[in-house]
Length: 125
Length: 164
Image: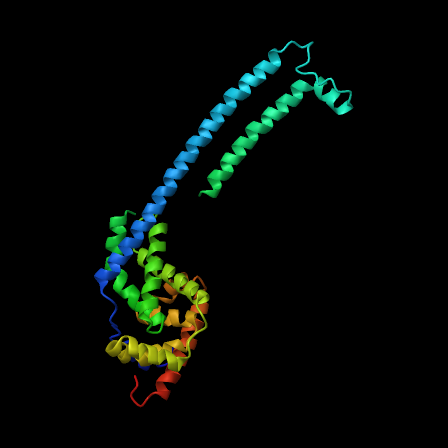
């Protein structure tokens, strides 16, 4: 860096090129910022809506899950939940373990609901 | 940062930013303005959680530099130097003609060297600041500066008959 670069200094001396009108430029920028803010606002509204949907889904899941769980547990232990009357081993077993099967099914439905809601929320971000 | 504060800050700095980008785009005013608009929108989006500081201007230049690189990557191959001079002279007659030789000389430099030279000579940034804007080491910036200056010096000598 000890070389003489005075000719390069001269090259940039008084460099002041004309650019387009500043007011027009700022107006264009303002329009773009308006558009950006509009999109951002719409995204926020959508996110809020999805948050609300997630909360409602969670509350519904909790209430429905609780009711179903109570029904399953309160059902008389001796009598099966359902009987399929088909002499096919897997279906007979399903009839025997009806409570467990129903619990698994209900959990799967609630979990799927939550996962789908989360996915929709994520894809809208 | 609020939009009002951002706009106030930008309106004070936009002319210098556009002049820097104009030189970086070798005199292509429309391209420079497009990049400036894109960069400022990006800066606005990222400025939401940012505190106001003196580093903000350098940060805007960093965004502008990255936006310039993105534009360059997306654009069609570089136009030949002679063609470049013609476009500059027909587009913005007097002013472009005045700086035509400088733009033509800058067009011979790779983007990183051009940026380092312009930030140093137009903005007066230090090697350290340029390294932060270009996201590389100070040693790399020193090399870019040295190569850029040598190249410009060669062109200066070649055009010693009064182009500059």
